[in-house]
Amino acid sequence: MRTELVRIGNSRGIRIPKPLIEQCGLGDTVELRVEKDCLVISPERRTRQGWEEAFLAAGPTENDKLLLETAEPNEFDLKEWQW
Image (cartoon, rainbow, N blue to C red; front, side, top):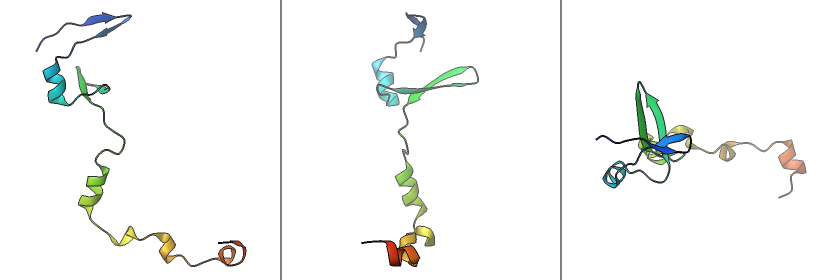
């Protein structure tokens, strides 16, 4: 598809047709990057997007225990800390 750059102040912009926006899942904010001599426009990635699925796919390990469950109380815990 061919399109023209439009002036926006000192910058330039492009108009992206609605079908392309929908097909690419673009929202109000996008990510821009340059790869070789191409400008790549992609949907904004949310912080930690996909982490939950990655953790679930990794499965449980022996390191999943909380340290508080195995920690022995120290002198501060026994004498000074008030519950």
